[in-house]
Image 1 (cartoon, helix red, strand yellow):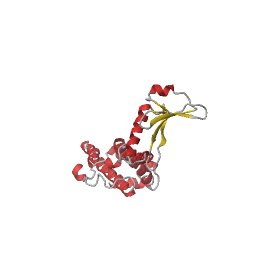
Image 2 (cartoon, one colour):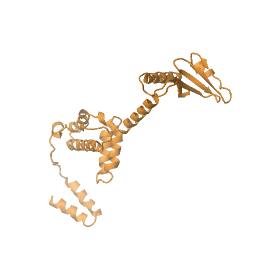
Image 3 (cartoon, helix red, strand yellow):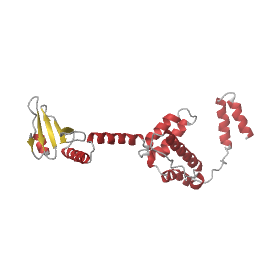
Image 4 (cartoon, helix red, strand yellow):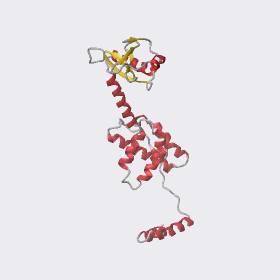
Length: 245
């Protein structure tokens, strides 16, 4: 067993251990590197881990894939966990699981689940998906769905109102409300309340008014001509609607 202040120069100069053997070089506080007979250099931490009565060695990572500085930082973190009775292996797994959960509950992940689960059988499913991606996914995609606030929703909707697109604003708010309510009903995304709950359309958009625009004569002629491709019974039906208003 060799003790020395391990540096990158030390690591680069290490030779393989004899065939069938290994060699340990220790730094301080249980931190060291093990060299195999193939020349593999593995950072290790010797410590009395929770649940073990004797000091044991655990691998941190291989050099140079893991840098000396990163290995020292990992060893320091492990010692902190051990000092409060936490097993580093358990903590690493807990953090890994937390990261997986975080990735699975981003707005993008939830929206994709919503798109797969709800929209394929809907008449306007493709249109709804397009609007969802354009209006909300492009802005909130990487954020946890639980971080979306009423102000976020209000800002996303109000820009349509400010542009005079009140119908778009009402439809977009209804879409956001639908998605968040669906996510809550799944009980697997960590969201318990919708940021849309206290948003009243009339307060941020205004009253929803009926459309008043009618087709021009040129548009009516184009629509009349287009019905020729529909055949019976739709062609005469649409023409009847046009002549009766």
